[in-house]
Image 1 (cartoon, helix red, strand yellow):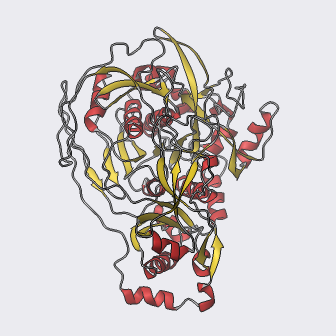
Image 2 (cartoon, rainbow, N blue to C red; image 1 turned 180 degrees about the vertical axis):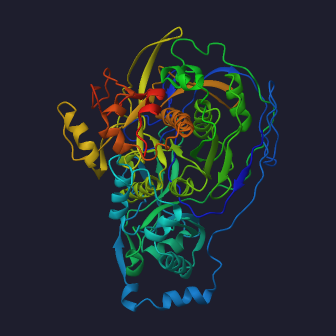
Image 3 (cartoon, rainbow, N blue to C red; image 1 turned 120 degrees about the vertical axis):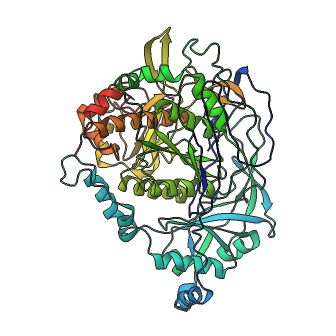
Length: 625
């Protein structure tokens, strides 16, 4: 098995700081309190520590050999610069020279940088003008309403266009920002003395950097340093940039841009520690104690084992996993091989700066998506860390390039509480999600672990995966109920789509004119926790961070079944999910349990959506062109 890590100097935007919350023995991945905006990684309960080898910072090329089969991790790095900053200065100057003087006047413009609030963000005062920053500026989609209409048309089984999704070239020609506008904004940033580093391949984002003083002058604001309350209880607060002042853009920039999407401290410098030691085949001794979740148990719960028995395991399919930092291949192989799963390592595509660390969130997203679809290839779209500048850019780039990479299903669990993110950030995620839907990509996102709504799952172009709790007696699944912390409810950002209106109207004693989540669900409660192998240790966690990659893996297996039986891949899910009663019947209806705000009910409910998938029935029932 060969691992190839490709570093692409593409043009991307990334968004969030994900974390895992810890509660007692079995811990969820998600928010821990009402002031949290991100998922934090809490201290896991350790079961068996099997490898005390520490990682050394040497180089990033290694080989991993398992104890029951040959497994190799070879990380090669190649760079493909698409920064777009090599055009002549004369050409860029000419672009700016054509702007009339009156359009250089500054105008107030929204931005995605948080404001000090004395609660989550404590203001420490003005940032040093000589300190560095990195940031994202967005560009507006063209004919956005027409793009929405297109997605609804091609995802309608009654339409002659059903299933005829757009190509990337068609997107660029008809809906992406114009190349001339993209070039113009780069020229303006460079005119302000800023460095343009990464360009989104769909021309929707530009990542740039410089000094704080340059930022302040360019945008008529003053960056401050805020200490952001850490969602992981007991851990240090996080330094971030914030601003108490509004920003401005020149009129000609504001006419083409939704604004500054994010601004963060520079990426930490260093090198990724080398992987040492060996792959171990050491399943936890109490793997199926109580309601602990192994891959086999999850497959049984959602009837994926029926597809396995028919010879389907995701072969020929590719799953995109959007992450910050990177994964540890030997720990991943230890997890898979310990549960008798033989599969290749992910192909890691680094979209921006090289990472210097590994996250447990990144580890679990890859290992559980891969566990549910052992035959599928995993394409890991990596950003350097989990700050907004990284994650928003990475999300946007992954959803655009997925089609070219032959990725049909994408998952992200790097989520933020919706009420903690400025509207510009939420809207940027929504625009990128719309692009993914238009390209026929099935996009799953964790809805969070706070009982409230998260972004990007709040977007109607994303299928939000909520959480349940499973009850096992020996090898028998006895019940599944709504998890009380399942991220769910009325979103802040988006109007209710027409396809969701009937379901919300049927939910007892509730009405809303906003988009609601979740859309479907899978196990997430820390009381029926998932196993994960991280830092050479077995531990158990809960959270919708597991539910999203699990469902993505299931959908890859379903897509293989459909491909080999002459049916199209599932594509954008939400409209059919909410309007096709036969499809709804292929989900286990969750009718017991509640969150703080909403109770489970027959049919759709906010916490569990339409319920949990029954894979074989869903594969056979989903309509095809």
